[in-house]
Length: 447
Image (cartoon, rainbow, N blue to C red; front, side, top):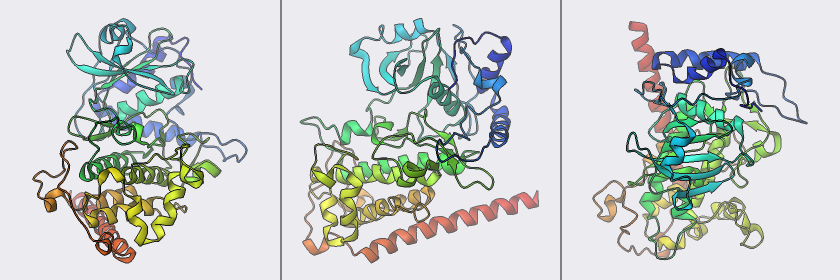
């Protein structure tokens, strides 16, 4: 694990500041990183898996010995244009600035807490912007390594469905990250920690959130170069803005995915129990399909309103996937998966397809699981609220859809029909990508 105790030489400062270079340099940074990672690969050890593709696997002269991140009072900015191939406008903050922004980290500004530390709502005096400030707990589960990974990741990756990193602070032994403020908090707050009197998320808002989360993963898996494995997909890491648009957050555990002829990366098992893919838990072999499994757990939470792991339930019901597996196999019992708070206010076809997608993502064999791009395609084909008379593409969670009465035999379509519908959507997505690839190849050859 790298540490930050003596970042003093000008050469080391320049190394870290490269993450703030102009957008035209980003591709070179990523390529250089990929080359270095490939050079540092070692045979996988079953007794103690070692990370091979971390962003921290840069040359020792650049990142392994980084001790202290510069935190000048003058903010530094980089260009932020395009979708994912440019550095964001990252800034450096002093601890004093962030203490002022959060009223000296008062409890009234506290909006979240986890293994990494605490998150505060803050107000930047110079820009007038409201932000979320994550203060790393020096005695917590995440350390300097995760801090550096997150700064590097979010400085190189940018997408509509990834939370935006505004800047960071590393004054002395203080480690803080500054993000855009997501006013509605996490999905967990609205789905699993519902306070009395709060209107539950309606079906269409749940599927909208699922689609946005899947699009965030799709960018990491198939559009980032090299691909990135998120490794921490869970409801508490999906943040919501005022329009219930979802963004993935917390990239401290993310890893650069397999490149070249490699099929996986080896890593010690990290993540949250209940969301981790079974093959990753058993072997430490990590692939993009591991994220697909974790997404399947989140989708199942959206369908059922139940936690991935809940020790207050009895026996096999404590693990959500274990409880749901028998229900996946019997279409007559699919309705038992529905969150009671939905009160059957959902189109039967949309519900059936969502259950089928979750079932496919949660297959024990990673080879059988779909690519997240195919999941995006399948979720995009789900029926919209128009069939219930609502005008907007997705219903507001504060407006429950009209009561829908469905007969018992009409509640769930057959397994064959569900699988056929999803298979057709996935096939359509695959054909679409193939056609796009051919078009790009044709354009390239004509230049």
